[in-house]
Image (cartoon, rainbow, N blue to C red; front, side, top):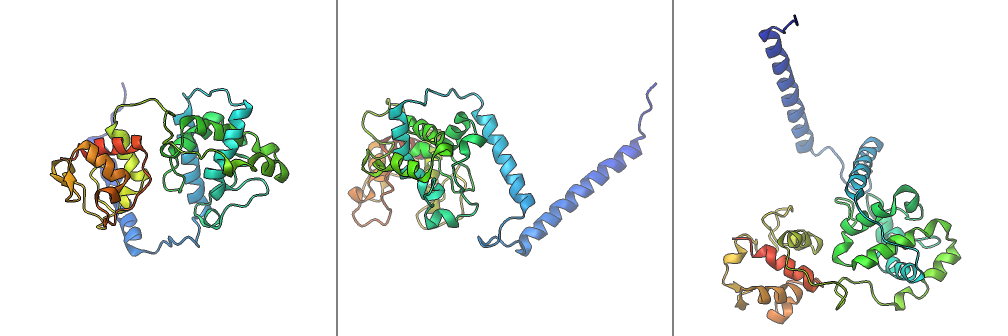
Length: 287
């Protein structure tokens, strides 16, 4: 017959656990409130914190990329397109063989780092997932809002070549890149039409920095008041006090604010048509 713990002993253990949890919460709150942790970019995280965040990122990428199917990546045209897109979108922060990142890339914390050894650390599926979805709190954007899907894979294909490149190889591969067709998501006929997706639009508001100026329900951000809060947007009669609040006018406002109100301080964020329609779909859920 199994011995059973006395009820009072179970109560002691529960009380001890609750006390420990409460003590930890109070200490964490005091640590945050004290401001003692130096968040300046000139003071790095401790190695333990850095390693913990990096390991968490690695495990997340491997899990989310596990089911992706990798298309053929070795065609010469794919590699040439990847070289062009790499120079336009990646080299600014990551550099290349014999090619230094910009001062922005060199100064970011955490450091973007070179991609010369990326293919040794990540599978093509994982590199695609990172490039497409970005990494939160690292400065790495979700390029799915700026590039066609075929171009995302082309960049992955080009990264497979980087470990074998000399500086001369890299210069030769990217020599004509800036004169090539720009890497952009909004190329007519580049993607099949898709119905507006409100959830994708919610994510797009963060990729176009809408939450830098607006408080948006359902979107994480600071308590900002540069632009008006967007709660209840769908119930508003007018956009910018100028045009009716309907989908087509809203898409126009998102893509080209000055065409609706020439004096508005809202900038033109170069939002693609698809993203604008998805964002409009999300804003129209805010009642």
